[in-house]
Image (cartoon, rainbow, N blue to C red; front, side):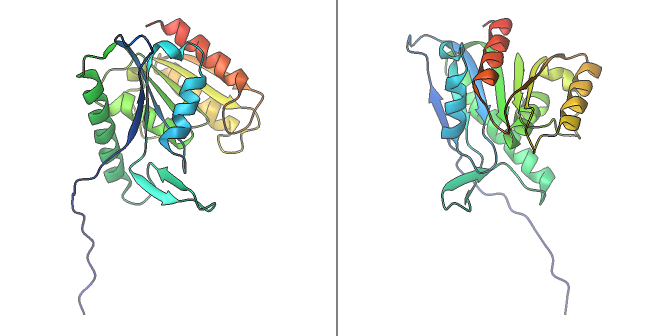
Length: 217
């Protein structure tokens, strides 16, 4: 009997994202966010809306391409697993590039492009900034590390790197390592720790708002 062979085939697939424009209706800078494992675009949109100073931005929450039912029986999504990792990275970055291109070409976006990633979404924010098509003004990372294979970190330009001091998933050692990688790449980095766990709280949102104000529009 011959051995079983594995193949891949490319097919069209639809991605989903949420968009909120400023109430003025005028063109605005773009703040695009990536949710964590098992979450949805709604979860990330709620985080973006909670950041002070983000009201003047166009807010876009991008949902991962791989939906599943969580152990709680609710719908969630994942950016990737270890299986076919390189292929998933290529697909995900291409998908996000298309979302950003459609917004940037719409005439509704002017000024900065800032990325925000939580947990698993932090890796997507990093990959989008480093290997994606669009130059960013800054990147905000919450409770998630910089993928170890990435180089050219200077493309992230300015980074708000945040960790809850009780976060069991994003260990302090990884946080310190990531801050060091950014400094070595001469990226303007703002490492922040706050009294919380794996997620955002008011202390985090205040520091995130300060970062956005420092970037300007």
